[in-house]
Amino acid sequence: MSKSEYLRLADAIAAEIAEGTLRPGDRLPPQRNFAYERKIAVSTASRVYAELLRRGLVVGEVGRGTFISGDARRGAAAPSEPRGIRIDLEFNYPILPDQTALIAKSLDGLEKPAALEAALRQATSVGTPAVRSVAAEYLSEGAWSAAPDQLVFTGNGRQSIAAALAAVVPTGGRCGVEVLTYPFIKGIAARLGISLVPLAMDEGGVRPDSVQKAHHEAHLSAIYIQPVIQNPLGMTMPSARRADLLRVAETLNLPIIEDNVYGFLDNEPPLAALAPDSCIVIDSLSKRVAPGLTLGFIVPPRRLRDSVMASVRSGGWTASGFAFAAALRMMGDGTVAELTRLKRLDARARQKLAADRLSGFEIQANGKCYHLWLTLPAHWRSQTFVAAAARRDIALTPSTTFAVTPGHAPNAVRLALAAPTMDQLDTGLRTLAAMLNAREDDFDSTE
Image (cartoon, rainbow, N blue to C red; front, side, top):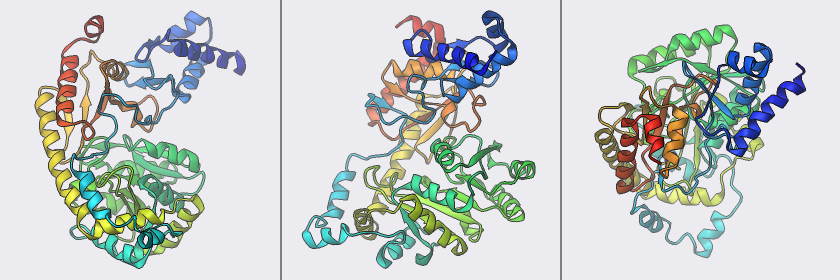
């Protein structure tokens, strides 16, 4: 069968998905059965499934088969933009009821001509001495302190990740990442021409032996990990694992890009406290403050600072002057510190509620963070569960969104607890518990 013919089959299935004949969560037959039904070779069926997987129209669940993706109609493997759904357990930006008043008080006067004129000037990747000084003091945690002359700034955390990757991983290079990781790293790497290599994990985080194995199979240029409150699993890397991982990275001469965006919810310092010459720390204000008012931070080793600055400039990722002015005020007057304190309390309250409402189900959680990982009972499939929740105005994120390797996602979902009100969260969790207690077919039959 020619290439155009195997693509024709993939197009036919894509059309059935677009028309609604095949719905999110529907299971495709095993490839051998598909080949028999279509009177084609098994190798051709494999190419059809691979093409559907590449387009993001299907997902594979280990030991369960191939299913129509919950994102199939929009053809996207990355998370969507917020959709205005009633109970949003998909996007994880904590916004407290009183935080707008706190921010407004901090920014009072910034609209006056003299202050606004300064805020609207052209900014640079290194900001101003005042911003560097305040940010360095603010970011320091425990045994780790950032020096003002180390800091580089971007518009947000994603831009910081992109700039760090571009600085240490060449086009065509390989970067090791957690096998389940921050979803947007996949799109960032694709645009930079970087291949992501999944690193095996256990309850302590990335396994050092998996880093060694991946590097020996084909050279890694760096690794990207989340040592503190990992997304989506929530774990914080224990001290023994940190030491072992850093020992391996030093032996292999591997830079570590450590994403510390959720670190404000814990007191654990970044890995850079133990290996300042090997680690590039990434942070931002989006979770601490609000998604609409943010600033990205990069704290690289001094030997890499020029390369990181060049990446920021060439990528067009320099923060705005207004972001610098707002951040300077909020970090300097204690507003961000107060928001951090309040959000730590809020996260713990939400985790407590979730643990109570989902008691009896298999969850992986960290009592300090804003998300948890829910392993589904055997009678539910990840994509079908997400689709069924959406029909009840609840947005969830399937495990496939976080999986680096297509077709190798566990049967699980992530619940982001930050966005709903406590009453909405309670309602959403109760609804999900009822769904989990019902069989998939029985639950759908009640609709």
